[in-house]
Image (cartoon, rainbow, N blue to C red; front, side, top):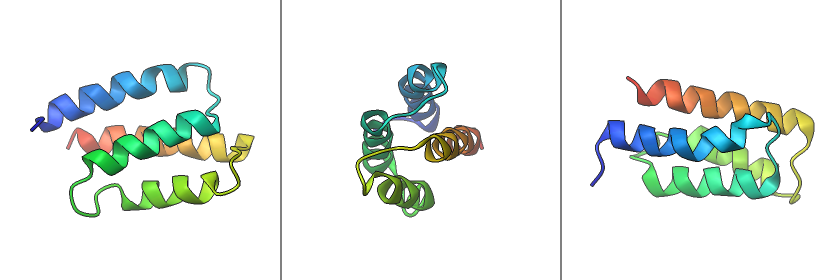
Length: 82
């Protein structure tokens, strides 16, 4: 089992490339959603997972959704530091 710091480092590495171009597409959003589902503890990432599921329901991430996902990734990383 990974420590919290190891999980944070893994998530940071995963999302670093995704956030680099400031545009998140559906494939990248699916990768983030899958990682969160596999590493959640209780309802820890429930809101973010739900948001990603909703955004992915049409198979397309529009610019507004992309921005909201980037913000959510930042919040997840910040919360993992606690």
